[in-house]
Image 1 (cartoon, protein in one colour):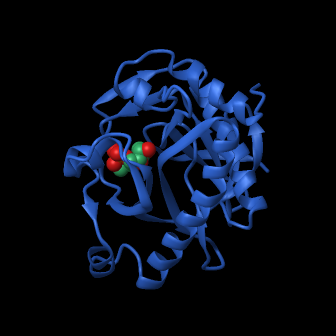
Image 2 (spheres, helix red, strand yellow):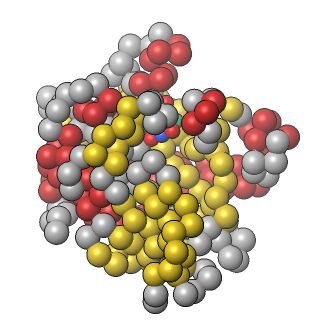
Length: 238
Ligand code: TMP
């Protein structure tokens, strides 16, 4: 496999073409963004930590029968992934109230959500990722009814696997965001990444925030805490 030219640079990762039209290289950079790109900083080692964190999680999900784009680690900050035709709608599951749910509905942070909630957001920084629903997604052609149903099912399957994984390591999976795409065979497949950048994780005992809220809220020790989450899960970072 040969890495070719850069196709696309997102806020935290870049996508490169390869000599295989069905495979891309994902490069995890140190760039860290919040509030739809309004707050931007470089955090040393973040690319490596998130790449290896994501690899560990994607392998756990694959082992549980969830189809992902992840093919393998290429280096400390690069992974090989399947090319997907991305669906521009983000799926968010919440087990505990935090973030925009508290702001929108006046719910107290920390309230247990039973059953967990499922929300859709349009991936669009200029519009600040507005909340949307299935009807809008279907009408505007972002996804079909069948694709939305598959995404919802997969997003909750991920919850079952990851809630248990974090719980066993003394942490709470508060909420998370997933992105899906369609692979060459037409199958809905988990894409993007799963790292502390796209979820909320709290320590079970102290409720210490161990995710990107440390960056958003200026709490410090961002990457050291991401590494602590990884180490508790059994990841040894290069
Ligand atoms: P929220 O509380 O800001 O709506 O976010 C819910 C979860 O989803 C939180 O873990 C952050 C994650 N998320 C992203 O990573 N990127 C996004 O664009 C959105 C809307 C949410």
